[in-house]
Image 1 (cartoon, rainbow, N blue to C red):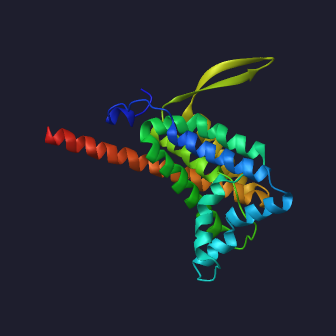
Image 2 (spheres, rainbow, N blue to C red):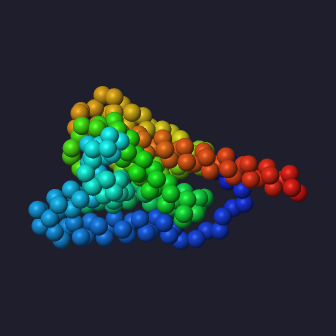
Image 3 (cartoon, rainbow, N blue to C red):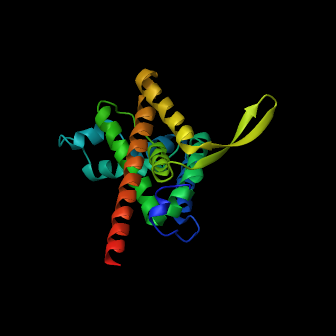
Length: 234
């Protein structure tokens, strides 16, 4: 059985991954716009759309200028990327885990995990590093939330991987708990012992991951309660 969650509810109809595709297209569009700008305008776009921790932290002190724009930056920063490597790496993880999450939670639930998880992860980073005045961009926190939601929804599922064995690659199905747990442990170690300039990335990953698991566990609990109520009515 792939997931305890799936056993508590009727199997969803398989549909195209609308939310996963929409988020990906928005990220690609934003990067295309960014790439077509001059270096000066690129920095201006990052300054406007990026999340500045010091400004967000200032919201709680009533000292941040342009409060509405600062609050919106928790979301707009998720769609901005400064390099193809950064963007494609995030989208790769998003498609590997996001499609399965969307099959369980639907397009709205997946958007909620991505947007709320990413925004809250950015907020946590701002509160942890309130003195940082450099804009933060990228979907890492949101993608980490999706990865966490995947683990919460499918704790016993296996993931197909190609493992290097000498000169050959061997395909193997590895428990998702092991793969994602290893990734999470690395983030934790880098957060605790990594270089100072890595603090933002690691805190974003950790916060998003924990939030994603929390969303998934809440969804499982709601589904179980509904199933029990339905059984009681029958």
